[in-house]
Image 1: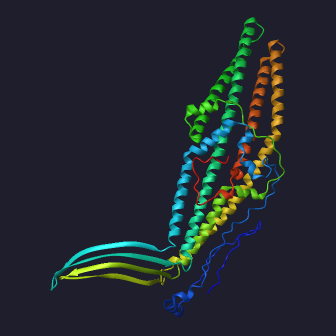
Image 2 (image 1 turned 90 degrees about the vertical axis):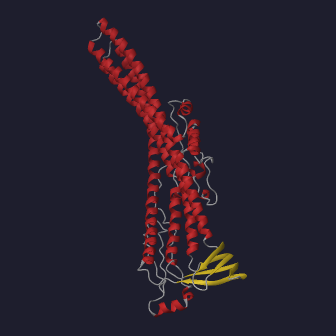
Image 3 (image 1 turned 180 degrees about the horizontal axis):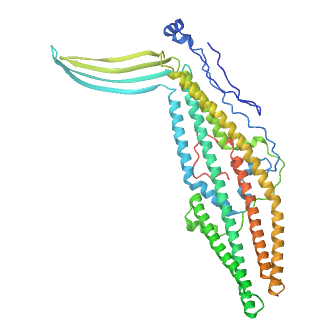
Length: 504
């Protein structure tokens, strides 16, 4: 008997994870095969080997950037309240209740729960009630007709000698947990998408306000320039330059308005709200960007990755795949079923009637002899699937570290750039006012005034963009850390409901 081989999948960071290879636990060929036919239970003590389902440790990470939740997962549950924007929090909550995408995840949970229930039932005996009433005749001499009637209770119970039914149940329960984790992951992703679309919409509205103010200002300057041209104080070229700038500003306003309308349409789909109702909600605080509080922290523990439901789902898939390896291994060995029946039967033919109780009981042995390597191929396939999931888990964990680090860097960078962008916007605004005064008094040129206007407009847009980047980085960090989800919330016997309030 070959010793089962198990693989240890790198519990220490950086440890290489060898592929799991199926172990053999079968009697020798030839005489051992004959002995197995005579004494099939002699090999019952041979353990079925399965791979170690402990997920590999995530790669070592520096965790150098600051984190605005102080490493406390509980603070993530109040993430959206930190933006001080009740409209955003309400839209996230509405989307969590009514978004159609979450319904798909809920349906998958129900399917997994039904599969787990069926797998659990396979470990218990089955009892069926049967009845028959048959009337038949024969043409051979002496010809006669007979009536047979009977009822019975039949039971079958397969002895789970090698754990096939148990492993099937474990795999089904693990997949139920995985689908529940997927549901949490869908909620986190949806909340991040709603928040990101909301931030982009508020940026669009803020830019629209800036462009409208610029257009109004350009129309005033154009009117003044036309009067100066008619009075002979300015050249016609100045009026042409200011007129072109005003037309360009008008075109910019129209394009920005269309962009804002498209973003509203996108939010209608995400929030599952009627457009008139959504526009009414969005009317409060139009053009005001949500801003997370300035919270500086020194480091984030690597354990924060345990908050990611996508990693939890993969971990449970590992457990399920390990169970399926055990199922495939057990299928190579004998099966014993206990069958039993009790009933009552009646017989009538040629005027003779007989009745009585019936019963039967006994084991049924099924021993695989030859399948052209099919069962072994199934074992190898299950082992390869397990190794694939190990590699996927390691890849996802590495990506999770990268996502957290990138979000932290972007958030820290945006926090530092906001003050510079504010100073630039204020200084260019002062310069624009001075240039406009010089132009109105005849001391400056239209070209100088137009250059100052463009610089001020670009600085105002850049400030809004940096503030939006800061919001986007906070949203990315929220998603990278699993959105406040906790592993304890995966409960196989408790189905998430669509009315449950989302963990923000």
